[in-house]
Length: 358
Image 1: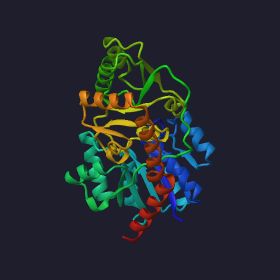
Image 2: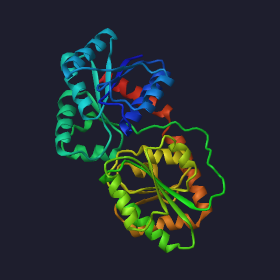
Image 3: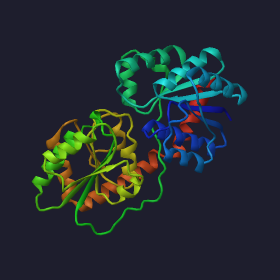
Image 4: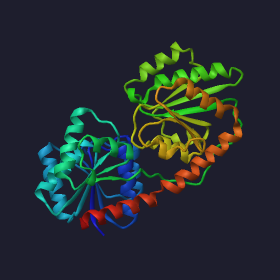
């Protein structure tokens, strides 16, 4: 079994952080010698901390200035006889790549979780990928194609989709007086809440006799703008904004349709969680959404900002309860069969073997 460090910049809330601790748990369960290292040791979400403790994951949070942290990291590598470092996101990828310079026998694998990066991050990631690390894991094929076309060495790119724990399906079947639509996302521009809210408004106008509720769950810098737009569209009684709720899984069980209007993605953890809850999904055709949503099977994939088409798909699901239920069951079965934690561990062990032999 290899000895592995999983290195993150922080362990605050986020998709990359969630996948890092998920992989840490899986490797721990597989009796791998694994240590989860947090570069900014004081930046850890309470929920993530509880998850680490609950799953008995070996965890080290680095403290002090960058030089002190790096010396501690090198000592961990030496003392623990680490053979592989996996990293997530730009800073951690860079640190991993630099570490490779000091230890040629170390296998270093970076991680990119989106199909779009700011120029400066793309520049650094490209250098680290092409010249320092042994490989980079992308969580979506969309990024692999886009980044390869812009100079990333394609032979060093490996795509491993995210995984998620899939418990037994337990939808809340209590009678509701409204049809509930939900979006779970950070309150930032690329999530395009403007399109989501305009689509919801048009849906309520089109089916005026049906009572609707739209839940927006998340947090972020655009909270005030979202609230202002809700007021401007006279949706205050129909839209409820939930700030960083701890019980997303329970909320999803009370909903009927999941909506995602993102302008770009990697592989969406939020959509995956909605599928675990047995929800049909309407989502924009970005990132690897097409791998999660099979059109007219468990939902619909639509172009970005296509308000009228989004309304059409939401309306179809809203007025066809049997279709909603069938699509929701299909969502659950698809996520269970194709995105299991067991499949994730298998993919990573295959990757370790392949790189070690190359």
